[in-house]
Length: 88
Image (cartoon, rainbow, N blue to C red; front, side):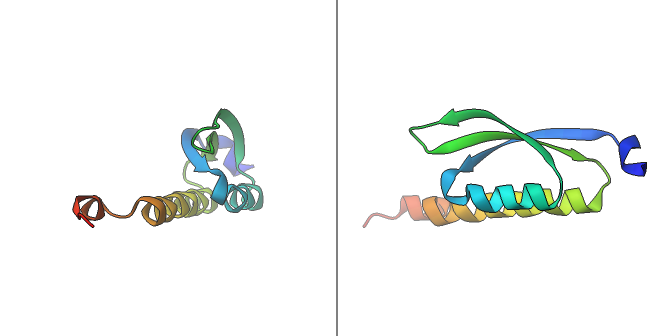
């Protein structure tokens, strides 16, 4: 029961519906506590609050994977800042 002694950290993440199942799979597989804080129907996103144990390498890796997926998705949809400056 060492993990019960570690402090928990909570963070909120905006999850696009397109990657929601991938994120939920990571949350369930790593037994992370999470809850939906809000829904944005216009943007098709959920605001999800994730609680993880500090110092737990499995939780840290899962959170890094989630952040990576969100970053990759953002890059895929919006491109880089330099892409916005190019006139087509």
